[in-house]
Length: 289
Image (tube, rainbow, N blue to C red; front, side):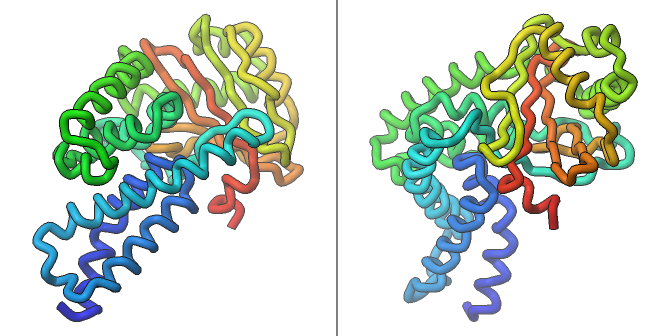
């Protein structure tokens, strides 16, 4: 296999590998570093063409690299100023939300935040097996445990994830409609309209990273969260647009000051149960460019 052929095979797998690393780490930059290191290791093999299952080899390699990186990432998060949230994946929304059949659960903000409560081994076992379909013996090789132990890790993780998932998730079209209604209520200062969209126990988290203003801690309750949102969005806004945030309809807000805000929504039973707001400019560099 020539290097050009090897590169073509690798590039075909890159999107999936970046997804594996991002779901593990919650950071685009760190995920890209893991994938690039996997490429260097592949090129360094004496005969990479001898690998029978290239996807499996690459997934195991990236999974192991991401698991190693997760340890140091967690130490940094303990020192983080304010609330830490995963770096959002922002894409332009499709013109017709009905064209998207399902929301992308594999990288949803709700899932990533539940995964933060798991141990690194549990998180890796669940992601590699349940989300990315890797057989338990291969996951065991990544985690450094027996297949039986990995089954237990994944089972414990699965229970935690199930508790944190919406029981009645929306379709993409339903979430798009709700997010558009939310944006309209905020811009119009419509408290009653906003309250109608929020679950009574809604939670609002904001990540400024100590770089810009953000909530110092999570806020709960529809009335409190609605009033905080209206106080924030009552200022003149240059741009407020619906986008895809981690595979689901969300918002990008561009204030006259130049500060960007990305809002992701967790919806259950037709109401917003969580708002996760990222304002840390270090996590929004792809939008700033």
